[in-house]
Length: 603
Image 1 (cartoon, one colour):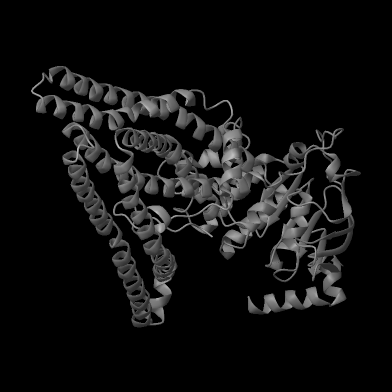
Image 2 (cartoon, rainbow, N blue to C red):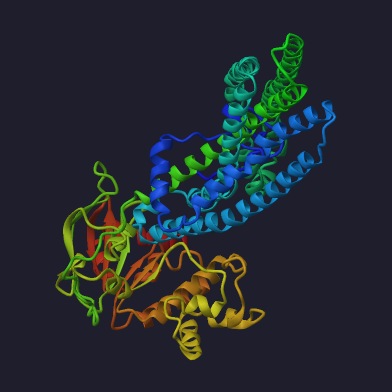
């Protein structure tokens, strides 16, 4: 399913919301295993991480040493000693802290982007090698989400969250050690306050996690309602369903509002209560340290000052780490989704002694071919047919009968599960994949154009073609007329990938592309399904011309376009139930004849 944007409040540890970033934590299934794989995947691209580790330790120095130096300054003032050198040390410490953090960000920007570049390149390269069956099982929006959102989450974590996590970790460890050195007894009191904060976090997050989960479901339902309403607005207006649409939206919007308010209220408890606990802990340590000072257990005011500053700084990194850890979990979950794609098997590799297909005649034979997208559901059953080179074959049948599957097996978008398909006397699997597919010119039912010029779309796959060949292909396909009427003719950029053209015009461009390919075998899958009757007749004449002296397969629902075919195959329930020329099938007076007469009567 495609990822949906959400507007839930940002979260810290275990789903506690925090204003500003707006997303719910997605927890990984196997954090350790995913991190190990991520480490291996970025091998050779993480040079300099050792420096980042060192700089992270140095970046925490200011937080660790500044309270101690401040305490020394207070002690010196109380004893009326000179404090200039102490203040100078403190100033130098903060200058060095700025320099270290600048270097840390500088190095991490380069290292992080090189690592992400490697991940993105590996993922995209693997997607290119995946079989068509993988894309049939996935929505395109979901794949886009993995290529963009998930990789961006990993990028953010590597570039910023990782360095902050390391820095805060060193800070907590350093402050804790300094507190123990100054006063183990006061440290015990401080840890009591930290324990109370963790208990509070656990209680609140137990409630908010469920609320934020419900909020995401409600938000998804509302987004779906909006998407359906906007895309289906003409239909809604045509049936006068505006009030019902608004009522449904109102119900879903009210539900989202109710859950969001409850989630925000519960999550809003945490930060104020944490501040109260911090302040009470601060007061308790101040009073307790004062008592110890009066009893002689603490020998200087500076020590109390240092410890109180440490207490203030001790709990802050925990809150930051909680937020960073959420981002970290989301990034690792995104990495898991990336690895799911990388774990998919690529298309079958060419056999070691694969044959070249430099000169293809186009003789094709199906021998007892069976195929199913799943083991328990056969789409084609025991298909056997011989097709001599140069034969124009038409494949007809009801929706879902297996017509498109028939030609998908020819181009090896899928491999047969039973039997075999021969091309020029050899099994398709014996040829090199690139040579095999180069032998086919394909026009699919769903047009595919790119955000490039009309010229580039026609010569896609054959960029070396000159302008005369491109124009000739467009003329044969019947596309030259409307192309010349475009603002810049063949140089017009299809900014929206062809959406600015009508469906019929887009189909004509894909036909021109197939004409230019000049492949020995041609496949036209519902090539005239989206054009008007006049354009259909033009395409029919063009098809007769381009199909001359080459093997061609025409899938069509409009039977008037395939009357001149040399062989017509009627497929139902995955089997060839009738075969022959148009005249032979009409004389047979079977299902094909009935379909043809029905269409002719409607026309």
